Image (tube, rainbow, N blue to C red; front, side, top):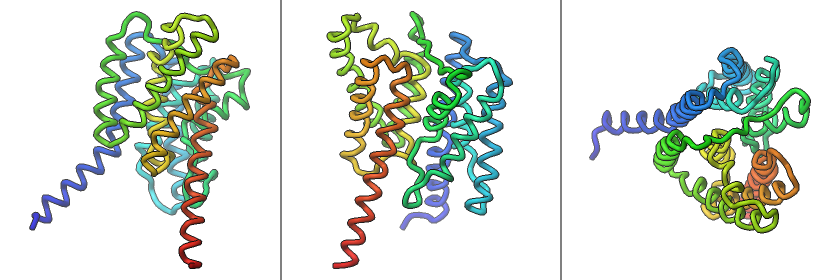
Length: 274
């Protein structure tokens, strides 16, 4: 019979790893991208984004759940906003973070929030404040070492929490559809796949499409959804949508979550009635 103390601390270690490994990874992406290309619009803007995420998470947690929430999720959302959003003003960073965190508590179905918070906030800002906001779109250029380091660390971290197959499915699908985009547009294949080497895509691949709270539970769905996201992104790119991956996830992710939750509820109801 296993020692109770050993088992207890193993569980605590597992919980801490799952809670903070993403926060550590996103910090690595931020440091590597900023040291390589100076991607931050300023430390004040990053601080505002993270601070707003913390504040809204604390307030919403107390109002809706009556408890203090673990702030690792808010940190990830805040730092994602600080990296992705581009604006000469400060208010878009605070508003984007506030919208991101608020969506977890307000936009819910069957007790679950169905939008990835950062994805929702970014798309909402692109729609509501397109004249004041843009999204980071640079690549790593010819310096591939930062990208390779992040991909190695990120892949190992995501593999440890058993979500690597989601990242891999999306990346393979992206590369596959890039072949057709190259044929259709006449652009070189390397030009079509170059966006995936940028910090924006690191956040998208490792955090947005793998978020445990907003991805479907069914194993087959975890393959089908990233493929569908890549396919819709392919269509949007052909129609010259600049921020195609964000719009694709914004549409496909919640739709898949809604359908899975609806089907589960329907199945449970039928089982009770029978």
